[in-house]
Length: 291
Image 1 (cartoon, rainbow, N blue to C red):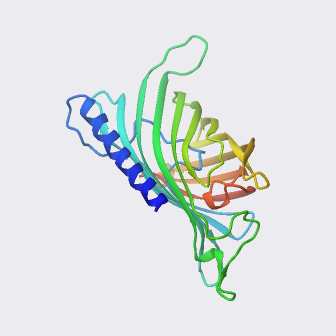
Image 2: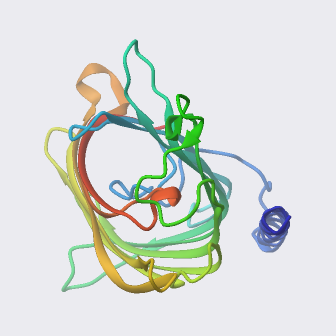
């Protein structure tokens, strides 16, 4: 019941903030939904809603992400927007006969607002400043791929909680970026104002860079400081650096401008809520589709 109450509360806050933002914005038509957001999604952040199929090169798993961000309102000059985020982040197991049982899945939805403006500096090689603020809810669940049908029990593994357990959180996330046609750098902060289980440090930090190289290729790095769960204390203590390094190519030469092939190397605390207490390292390679 408490989880349901928090979910309904989050939905109510999201709708209220959206209506307030649209009411106080400029007088253009309120809703013009578009996937061409004024704040370009971060290339290497694994928590960005996206459409991607990324098989692991390290084990028999596969990342399947389904989602996107969209601006519902953009100002006439495209320097301010209000939008939404919806997505799922799935961890699938690759089994025989082309079967992919879902081990864990995270659901995210939220409201965002973004700004951008020209930037001039004699010292820095950037020409634009942009920012994005998000209010989001995320929940996570173990699925059939984490259930042993032969024994009729959940696979406990090294999980410090009895399975199934509830994972839910609401947070505010802020990103500030400087960009040019060839590169972007950014820094961010996230405040977790409610979580189940409790005892999680509400503060986390983020930074990253993107470099757009010749031939429709790019290099990107996303770095986060994420809290470490201490099972003996039943709370988090300290931080661990979490990296996601990405390299890829947009398939413009094949007429597939919105299709990218990418390689990722991930090391740090798991992005999946059901494994938030667990560090991991792996490589993936696959396809990302931009709407």
